Length: 408
Image (tube, rainbow, N blue to C red):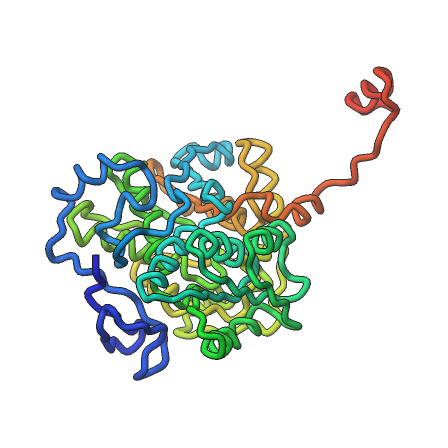
């Protein structure tokens, strides 16, 4: 379908739905896609959706692109009921949305399938992004699928090898910059203009159009209900804003009469949004040198901070920050107790829920969904820091048994 219009998130200025635009010419802030839902209703869509596979493009009526989609069969990720909290979690239902099941191992594939399809609609042949890792892996894969050239700007030394390998093997031109992700974001628009490349960072509102489909999936997976709480790790902030947009659209077509509350979780060393929300501020103060083991959310000047804070405010939500030690503990707990191995940024949502459960936030019977954004093999080096080196033993039964039993 076509976008009805583009709209500035700050001043409300509107533009034509087919304009190739990433920011508002009036105030310079970010924009969002407004989908034309006047002729859509859940009563009419429900049967069509159920006839299609449980994948992202099941919801194509709410996706503002046309023609054949560029897809790797993304979406349809699992929603797992978990019991991590013992007595703390007995009163409420805790679920994990496992986005590591997407084709390149992260939620970025949701946005990239729609973003690259949009690039195709516009007749573009070259795409570009700045990335801490997952975006580069996803961009490279979908560009390869579409027969496009991919350019990736990454901070030198700051990208997990599991993610960098994906970008390289999928044929992207990777340029490592002497600086942070925020430095890369600071030049990506100018590089895009100089190289005639289409920008597919989350400042591109079509990326978030793909990511909002996770909200539609949650609705379907919970039997036609929305959760009470959705908990997201927050880096650039686009994903949390996308969930909110998805739930708003479900409300708009009459699928649900209620909306969830959102919780954004950041790491202690990279928490400009959480700091602003907790202080009651209207704007963020960027973190000049963000530091956290959770590389996917190691962002000091998030591009979508305004969209994120707007979503938190409108959902009567909240934000918090957690230290790396709690993130790594949560990562280990989820793997040990439930068999889910996620990357550190994903575990931030789990760490946040553990903290809030101990504070008594969640009420009896509530459904709480933690979004785990990427697979643990995306960043194995960080995971291995939690364990000592495995020392070899003699290949004898006696030595092996001693090692198992912990004897001398």
